[in-house]
Image 1 (cartoon, rainbow, N blue to C red):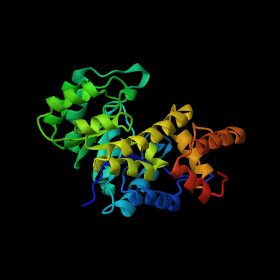
Image 2: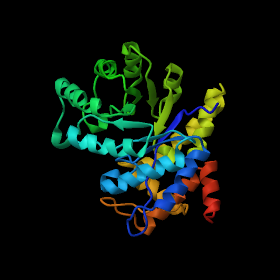
Image 3: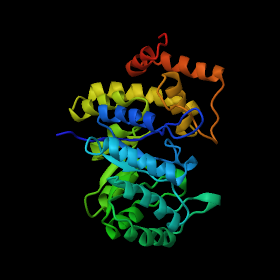
Image 4: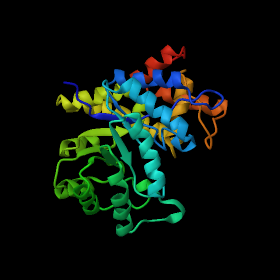
Length: 310
């Protein structure tokens, strides 16, 4: 039986004039099907959903379900909002499209807002009874003060429709404390960096944006790890870590490096939307030269297919 232990917050494809490129998106989703990687559609970060209209988001969800459902897990990652009303509006778009799980965040930490524990629980006590679908929750510290492990365990106890926790910025100590406090089984997804430890501690899957451009390499890492070939998995882990360190130069947000790679390797739909600005030709070339110098097999294969010397 196929095991889905990798989930990508995947990019969204756009045409040169900035429109949502539906045909390119269908092609793009195939790379995750081929690598047996579940998808989280329309993330605010890697998916650029903050620049999209409600109608565009609806189309992203519907195409994702049409292409992926029954083949790989198809989940949604609507952008965070300040109010329950706006959050529910975005969640409902994904639910109506037929996604299997919808990820939610707490109230957005805009203009320095940090929810008190009472405000945090009130937000979900109002929101979740309205959501008629299984829910994932992501306590992303990058969106404001993350809830403590105790708060997160209490949230899961109050709302049994939360079946997944996407832990992206938490420490090993947080992970262990959360496991100790949870009173029921909840899927725990963790970021790639540190995953060799957290998977041994009981994490369910790895989630992130890096799989957008290295799906085969991540699949090889996870297959080796789950087969118990940890020394070989560690070598692939090191390769991905080197890749992450390199693209991190362009990663105050994921769309920059993802769309630069899509452009370099002629993957359809590689236009980036504002507020991002495409790099100058010199910067793009420097980026590509550094990528090729990493010597990763999947990058070399993509370069050859794109007709680049490597």
